[in-house]
Amino acid sequence: MRYLNLIKTISNWPVYFAHKFNLTTASPAVFELRGGGRIFVPREVMHEFKEVFFDEAYLSGMPLALPEGATVVDIGANIGAFSVFAATRFKAARVVAFEPDPVNFAALARNAAEAGGRITAVETAIAGEAGTLVFHRGDATGVSTSGSLVRSTGEKITVTAVTLEEAFAAQGIATCDLMKMDCEGAEFDILYGASDAVLARIRQMVVEIHDQGKGNRTRAAVIAHLAGKGFQVKDGMHHLLWAWRGDL
Image 1 (tube, one colour):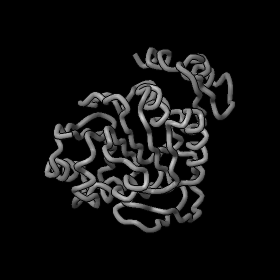
Image 2: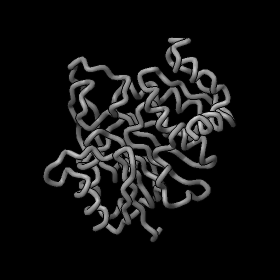
Image 3: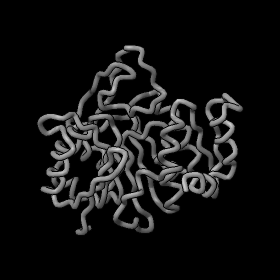
C-alpha cells in the first residue's frame, strides 16, 4: 500500500527508488506530482516525505471529510511536505504553512511556489505568547521539526513568534478545517495558550505529541485539555492524536 500511494501521487516515482538504493546522491530529489507541480525533497528529510506521501500519516485517522475550498493550517511545516500533499489531495484547499527556521523556510518557499498560489508560506513560529524565541540551531526546542535541513551547530538564532489567534487574524482564517501540528514540544504552549475563541474555529486537528512525562506536558494532559474545550479526541500511531468537533 505504501508504494501504491507513492505511485498514485508521484508520476516519476522511480526517482524515489534511485535514491533508496543509492543509485543517485543528487539532492534535492525532484518529484513530479500527478496533476501538476513538483516537490523538492532534500535527502535529509526523505523519511518525513515518506511518512506524508507513503503512509499518509497525518490523514490516516482523520474523522471528518474536508469541505470544498477547505482551509488547512500546517504548523511546523519544515520543507512543506504536508502542505504540498494537502494541496495535491484537496484540490480546492487553501493551505497556510508556518515555519520559523530560515533554512527550512527557504525550502518551504520553493515548494510553495510550485503550488500555483494555493500555499501561503509564513516565516514565523507559533507559540503560546507573542514575541521572539531564541534557540540553538538543530536543537528540538519547539520551533523546528526533527526531520530538518538544520544541522546541530550550536548556533543561536532568534525567530519571531506569534500566537495561534494572531496567526489566524493575520492570514484571514475564519475557520480552520484541518490543522496539522508538528513542532517538537511547542505544541503544549500553543494549545494551552490558545484562546477558547480560536480553538472554537478549528474543526479538526492532528498533533504530534512529544510527551515530556511530567506536569501538563504529557499526552494525557493534552487529551484532557482538548476534551475540556469541546473536542472529541482519538489516539493514533506515530505519536499522533486527532481532535475534532462537530459544531462547525
